[in-house]
Image 1 (cartoon, helix red, strand yellow):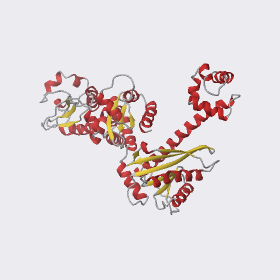
Image 2 (cartoon, helix red, strand yellow):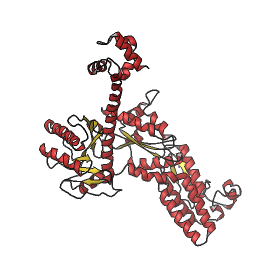
Image 3 (cartoon, helix red, strand yellow):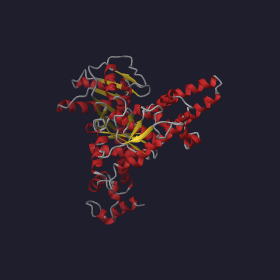
Image 4 (spheres, helix red, strand yellow):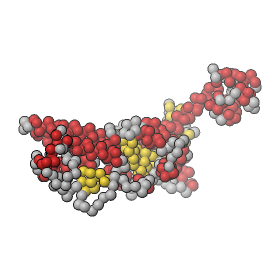
Length: 488
């Protein structure tokens, strides 16, 4: 189940990826980030790692085999993706971002702070020369675009003259078209110029949102003072910045919600639920049915805050008929934890029940009967995200932006997704099988024999008339009836 389930989940995610630029984050089985990349088209780029045909480098194929999950941050441009990719690689140091590199040096951004009017250049070999270096970056062409955009917004100098002189401006195209602040003509002081450099560095370091917010406040202040020309300049700068890093600034917060500090979330969850320690092994239980029909149960298992799909389990509810979620939950709890107890399996640090106080009470009564009273159990009610604990009348209310609540929601939703997927599969199979009920001469026993022989309705439909007639217990006339019905 493990490998096929992971691939199935990844392929489902690939279908939903946008064609826009962005950054993709690949995670291993333990939930750790193993690779971070950027793409012009997220769907095309990420899908290429999992293609069945065509040549894929052995190192890339090895990395793809280790991927257990992936996340994406859509952005507006390649330049934004380049900046975010570099920031995340520096922060998380994924192993494959190092392992997949060739012997070549990746480009870095150099800022000549030892000059009176610093400038950005692109280099491949950093030196101990008093300059500041940023990177490395994976795309030299994209990096050149970023430098040009930053220089265009702040009108920083791009010339390589070590000593600025007025005669340089006579032949400087940037000065003639107003694309440079012309420090060589003394039109800006070294102090003011370095303030602009500081703002440009904020962009390079991934703090563009902070800069945009600061510039907006200054623009409003200038407008209130009736300094409309200065306010208009700031407005243009904000628009330019937003075109370069606008969606990056907005989506980095989204990424922070996608990939929170799991350790902090587990620790916070342990404290919020008054557990003896952080629950490193959590099992979430959910029931899925339609008006009590074809009911199934599912268990999603998380280790250290990430899915452990090898340990997922699913159940067909056998003992309950009709609509009775409580008894269905009791059946699943009894079957799951009696097996673990009898087989000497590891018991979880927290059992999470999808539902309210009634579902929690139903689960506790079964655990008590199994001699497992005192196991950490909680339930989470979806409507208000209230967390109920044994022996407490009032629910635990977690802050909406807390890592602990995010973790509980993620685990609960994963159990629900797993249960729904299993229920749909059974329902689809049952619907297909019921087609045979409409064919005269096919009773319950013969239907079972047909499905056992052919395996499924889809396989039966692909058979010729002669092949159907050769099956045991199917007369020629009935074979024709079946064939015609399935191909009508």
